[in-house]
Structures are given as structure tokens and as C-alpha cells.
Amino acid sequence: MTSPLLARRGAVAAAGPDAGVAWHYGDPTAEQRALHTGGAVVDLSHHGVVRVAGPDRLSWLHSITSQNLLDLAPRTSTELLVLSPQGHIEHAAGVVDDGEATWLLTEGDHAPTLAAWLDRMKFMLRVEIADVTAEWATLGEPVDAEAGPGEAVTWRDPWPRTQPGGTRYGPDDAAHPGADRPWRHVLVPRADLAAAVAEREAAGWRLAGTWASEAARVEAWRPRLATEVDHRAIPHELDWIRTAVHLDKGCYRGQETVARVHNLGRPPRRLVMLHLDGSGHLLPERGAEVRSGDRPVGVVTSVARHHELGPVALAVVKRSTATDADLQVDCEGGEVAAGQEVVVPGEGVSVDRPAQRGPVARGLGHRPSL
Image (tube, rainbow, N blue to C red; front, side):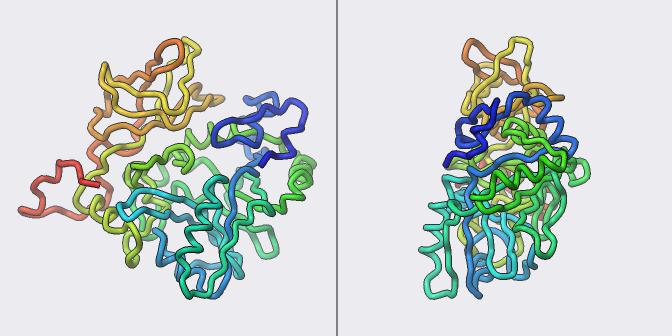
């Protein structure tokens, strides 16, 4: 689905998971600065929207996903994961309920499959599922606020605030680089997308592309379904338990792996942020191999040019990779050196992992079987 805002003068189309909207509108550095100072809006109309109505919606979603939704109040944002029976991430969605329906905000190509999976899981419950991406578009705003009564459906990104029932592998909330990134998604009727942007521009905001929003996301170590998640990913590897998983709720698909890795094991891989050497003007692509010496240790998942940090990336590497190792990343035309900034610690232990005693602790250094 192609955004009408791509017809703007100077618009350069994004590629990959952001195809369909603008990468930038001619001045990506200025757009980043405007977003950083809270004066920009980003067209995210390529994202997907699933609406779940019916009186059983919250208890039903609670029972089949990773999040505790039983007491979710209207206009209160959270997020959930749908896991495989083995605990691997299949879907991720921002969640907000407006009092009449629950809205799930996800990647555009995941909305149809998420809606189809939910439809298969409803059985005899009073729920109605619809992929409403064709009717609703998403705008990203650097605002740290939920919607008020009468305002548009809005999802306020909880990242990186550790939610009730969650835990963290990375730094505490106040010290986390994502603490300085206010962010929310506002839903507007797709037919009103251009008018909604024009209204914000009239108030002094700038229209920015995904170059700006992705650079801010990478800086904040914020995992994304379309980039950081592959068929092996579990939430511990991405520090995603802090906002998307409730460890104390009842049974759901994949819970056994979540509990086992949290209590006994260590995640096989870990997310890192890479500061890339920009002196050679080489920038890797998503999927580029990350090496420690001659040994492959992982892959790049997201790449950005940040207006202050320069070229940066997120990567998923083997947990055994030394946290102080000098890394190299393959690029077309050569390789670039990469310094790692630790997101998930090398020991792979959360801050509240239960204490291990006696024989139970033996063998905990071994990689869990997932």
C-alpha cells in the first residue's frame, strides 16, 4: 500500500520493511533534528492494524498471548507477543483498548496473518477480528502521552519502561538510552492521512521520513518485528521481556520456554548496538555478517545514519561473543570496524533471575535446547 505522501516534492521512497512510505523528504538530517526536538510527524501508513471487538476480547487475548490484559483500562497502552509452542516470536503488536474494541498495531505484512491466526483461535468466544489496515493509517509522533477522552486511538510506546510482570536484561529504565525517546502511534482514517499531516504542519511540525524514526529507534535499542526477529528469536535475546511479556500470568503458548530460559537457562544470542567506523563511507546492509576476527558471530538487523552518533546498527550475536571484542561487519566494497554497546549482557541473566541452589545449578552454563 503506497502512501499519497510519497507524491510530495523531494520524497525518496523507503525500501525493505518500510516500502510504501518515504525514507526522507530531501533533508534527512534536518528531519532527524526536528523529530529529536519533538517537532515532526512520521508517515507510518505502511503499518498494519487489527481490530478485535466483542465482550470476551481482553480475557481471550490474555489467554493466548504473552501479556496480561485482564485489567487493561481504556486508553492505556501495552504490547504483546504471539509465540510459537517452542517460544519463538511469531507476531508482535502494540495494544490499546478504546472501551469498545482492542486495537493491535503491527507490521503491515503481519496484519493479515495475525488476523487469520486470531480467527482460528477464537473458537466459541464472543470476539470479532478484522484486519482494518485498508481503513486506518498510522502516524508516528514524538509525544509521551496517551490519548485523552474523545481523541483518536493512540498507542503510546511503553519502551523501555519495565512493565508489571516483566523483567530486564539491560540497564534500568532511567539509565536506558530509550528513556529519552518519547514515541506514540496515532490512528487516522486512511482517507484523512494527508489532512492529518497538514494539520500538524500548520502547527509548526515537520514531515519526516523513516530515516529519522529508524535512527531514533536504533539509538533507543528498540527491537522491531520486521528487523530484529527471525525464526529463532526469543524475547530474552532482545530484552523484550521488559515491555511485552508478563512472567507471572497464566499459561499461554510458548510460556514454558520463556520461564525456562528466565529461570534456568541463558538466551543463546544477544542484541547489541554497533557503532560503525564511518571513515571509509561504507554502510552495511541488513543481514550483513558480523565477525570477531575470522569467526562469524552474528548478523546486522538494522542500520541507520544518526545525525549525532553517525553510522550505527543493531545486531544479534552469539551470547558467547566477548562483550569487549572488536567486531567487523561485511559491506559491499570491504568491511567496517564496529564497537559494541552491550544491550543484553554476555552472562545472559536477568536482574531478578531466581537464586540457584545445590544440584539444580549444575549445568546452567550450557545453552538451552530450544
